[in-house]
Structures are given as C-alpha cells and as structure tokens.
Length: 123
Image (cartoon, rainbow, N blue to C red):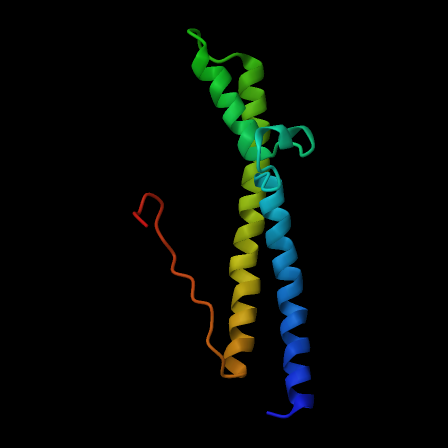
C-alpha cells in the first residue's frame, strides 16, 4: 500500500473508532468507577451506578422488614439508568461494530467477531 492510501484508510478507521470508543468509555464511566484504586480514592471520585445499586441491595438485605417505598423508588431509578446504558451499548454493538467490521472487510484486515451469548450461559 502507498502512504496516501494508508492515510485514507487510517482516517476512515478513526472516523468510526474514535466516536465508538468514546461512547464505550462514557458507558463504562457511568456504570463503574475505575479511577478509584484504593478506598480513600472514593473521596475524590464519585461512586457510579454499580456501587449505588450495591448500596440499595445492602440496605434492603440488612433489614428484617420488607423494603421501604424509598428503596423501591431508588431501585427503579437506578435500574432505569442502568437499562439506558444497556440500550446505548446495544446500539454500539448493532451499529458501530458492524460498520467497523465492514470497513475492516473492505480493507481486507482481520475483524472483531462478537459471539452472542444467551443470558445464563457459561463463559
């Protein structure tokens, strides 16, 4: 390949991959706090949806009574936000990954292959 063609291929890949990777990073950041490496780091970095949901589970499981109305409300709110991130991830998988794979195929390069697993299937 020549450098002009290589530059065009790289530009096409960047046009697809940069937004896709940014979207995936944003999704990860909304679900997980991956910057906190030690317990004291949580003072500098806010907790994310997974920790909030774990907090609700801890509160509910520590009581001898049924969950309170506010516990249900917080659970529903967090569940809705988590579902929203799942839909965004599905959009990436359904649209961005095939576009990337198509570009890879057009340029005769190895592709990323996603195997769909059923819920409950062993890894």
